Image (cartoon, rainbow, N blue to C red; front, side):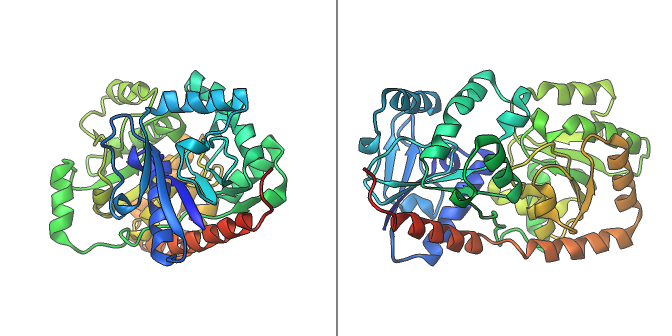
Length: 381
């Protein structure tokens, strides 16, 4: 087969979607030497490149930025046109960025990460919400097969979008071997210095945006901050949209000296950053999958995580789960983990065991089966 893989979210470092695209394609190349792989991505400057080892792939770069590219797809669907000339001609095209160009010469596999825009429309920019509301149902209908990254996402797609269950398959994301307990003192010290980390800290890692529910975390931490021996709180990740209330609330509560922001974290630094934390906390209101708590468990760091959407599937019994709307429950979970080394040790052990259930190699083998299944279908008209 000739397989074209949309690597756009990885090339443009789009947080969870980007890491999904990079890790999955890297794992596919590691296990599959029988098929030909091509990368596709939009590249407004023209000099954008994928990170190794994907930079060695033959690639089709479209000289457009995200908005014009999305508008081109919209116009193509509106006019009934196809976009085969924009892409390497192949047997299967894998859409990973919630965007599927209309194609006639390739089978289409579509990864749906979440339906956040349906359940939390206020957390999406109006233009993005309009675009997804209009086109995502068309993408899902047009795809030959749909990969959902969790059972929760699959249920949402079937129920909300009316997609036949037999067209969908759950393939969980994986965890990179880089996320493991680290004993490299020099590496830990390097990352501590680079991000100006306090000696002891509770860590959140993810985009700073309303869906991540950071105001609840700040309110829960407020009760701990009165104790001078309590660890600091580190909020690591780039600013998303509507991030300002997070900074405002920290100022209102006088927590500037206790709450630290790192901005963007380089992917290569994430394992050491997580390992340096005393506890990892993830209060998100909705996740299609939820890589950060999985990676924290793989690092042997105690995890406290929301019980919303797909997160219980990922965390299982490897962490303490709480209602993301319940500040008191989160405060209690933090106090419990901080006060008792036995609890932390138990969480480390259970988290490491749970993380072993997920691997990118397993995800790649399952994805390759999907490619093979759609390639055996009769030709498109």
